[in-house]
Amino acid sequence: MSSPKKQSSSLQEKAGISPPEIINVSAISQIQKNRRKQPSSEELIAGILDGNRTALSRAITLAESTNPEHADKANEVIKGCLPYANKSIRIGITGVPGVGKSTFIEAFGTFLTQLGKKVAVLAVDPSSSLSHGSILGDKTRMEELVKDENAFIRPSASGDTLGGVARKTRESIILCEAAGYDTIIIETVGVGQSETAVHSMVDFFLLLKISGAGDELQGIKRGIMEMADAIVINKADGDNIKKANQAKLEFNRALHLFPPKKSNWQPKVTTCSAITKEGILDIWNTISSYIEMTNETGFFQEKRKEQNNFWMMETINEQLKLNFYNQPEIISQLEQNKKAVQNGEISPFAAAQNLLKLYFNKGSK
Image: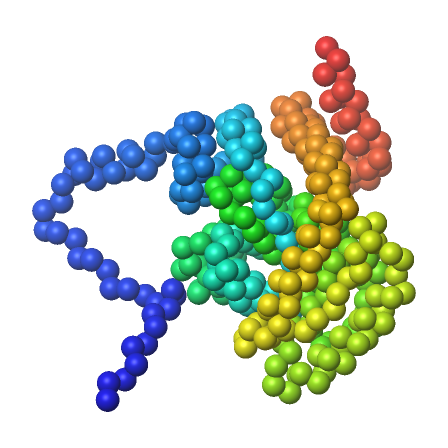
């Protein structure tokens, strides 16, 4: 009896190809030239609308770039894709580190692709406050989903952005929708006090919890609980099933203490296991019920309109900040003021006022 064929892992190292003895220098030069060639805005838009992942990835990279020269091109691409966007369900998923967000998203995303959905996962990785670097390892923890033809996974660094999202997550959503992805999942950095950022760009906000962490009641953050449209107790398998059901009862009691939501939706609490896939169908049914109800009442579209206004104001704030720090006069004076503040020669508030006055006086000329 032959042994079953072992399924290869996406992390498995493959043997390399030995280079030929004779190397075509001209061919190598042509390949390098093509790699350096930047596609035009029209080419990127056409590629995205055609579902080309490479074009989508390059457009997201362009949108995330802090290079001022890339901003106009990125805006052109987003403008060209906008008429084809807003046709997806946007789901935000958050939870404390260790709750199993990546494992859950892989199980949930795979379930959706089996239903015929096209799923885009925008995974936000925390950036170090010291080195400012990010590991961007979310793909390695979703090795089944990353091989799915109907799934697209894009890890991005949070940078200095608050709220557990990347600086250009909103633009990435539009680009993914234009590429034909009908379900957008945003995995945030984790539960914090600025989760309003991701809440302001999704239709459904899901909070992942685990039982036995000691926060069933005393550790609950009122803000995050009020934003959640569903609470899922993950890792409800094996010996944890009883604890997970107990946590479900506690959270249900807690939710009844909060005032009714503007959508009139009563948040649901459920349990699931990302390992055994138990409870995944119930979660999707809950999300579907929410979308159906809010579409009937008109809340779904009203919320989208409010979110668009919110992100217009956020973009204004961001552009003002970038413009301020990119002014040559500000760059030269900033270091001098920093040293003066450090040496106690001037207060931080007076230094800030001096820099702002310099900025506004330059703009009025």
